[in-house]
Length: 96
Image 1 (cartoon, helix red, strand yellow):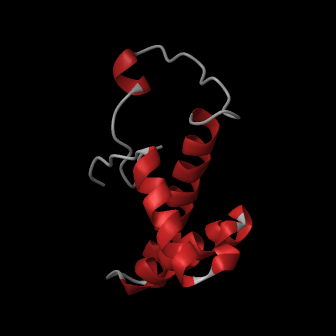
Image 2: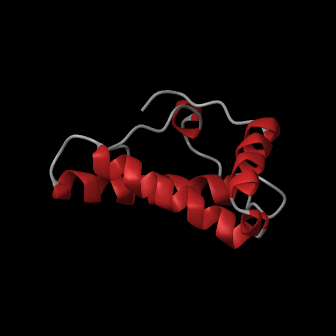
């Protein structure tokens, strides 16, 4: 997986686009449902059998949890890692 660059502006632009499609997506739960449905469709269209796709979904879910726990006002401080190179970097499918 390549490095990604998130910003508040990118998130707001995506949110505004969805709100222009469906005003109910102003609700954070509906917004997340749209993002999840889009993710499911994109993953389903990827090459590979169901087992590979299921494994990828699990890895993406772990990444979602990582981002949720380390970013934003309600995040938990991550535990310090023994090796700084392991504490920072780009998440890639298959990484534990």
